[in-house]
Image 1: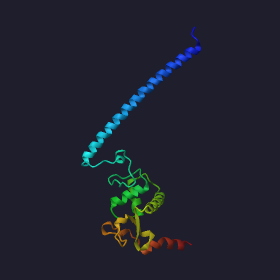
Image 2 (image 1 turned 60 degrees about the horizontal axis):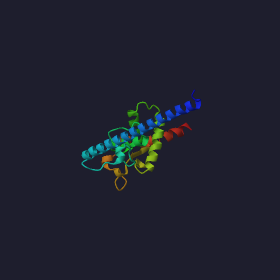
Image 3 (image 1 turned 60 degrees about the vertical axis):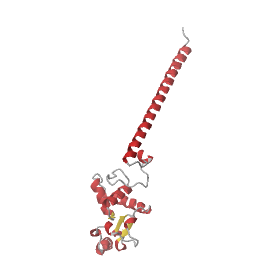
Length: 191
């Protein structure tokens, strides 16, 4: 009769040999797959170079990682992007200075599932404030009024800080004096 320890040892040893064999097979498969991916990447890089007229292809673009300085793709609304990316897209697509309300209206049109307009406006206001802090966009205030702030790009202003005609805001969006102060007048009357 076989010793139970020997039977257990033999079973475990055979299992160990089997697992070691599987490990080597997996390593070989992994290395083969990795080499195939490298070959595919090299082929794609050559095709992309030919399409781009021989210019070098940036690896970040091949890996689908966008650098922070890369421009927004104007053909695709960034529905899953941050509010900064959405605002950037909307301003660039509109190609003019926009009020916060215009940006918000655009988002609401593109994203009908957004139902809390006040929350959107609040979050968008915070995002635009941070975006301005980065220097990528500027606020242009008509009559030095916060309620008449329009957002666009610094390069859309002339050397005097005025909006270039081709990027002019919608003048119909400018609030008159009574509209600017109607909230504060209403609040004063309620007191």
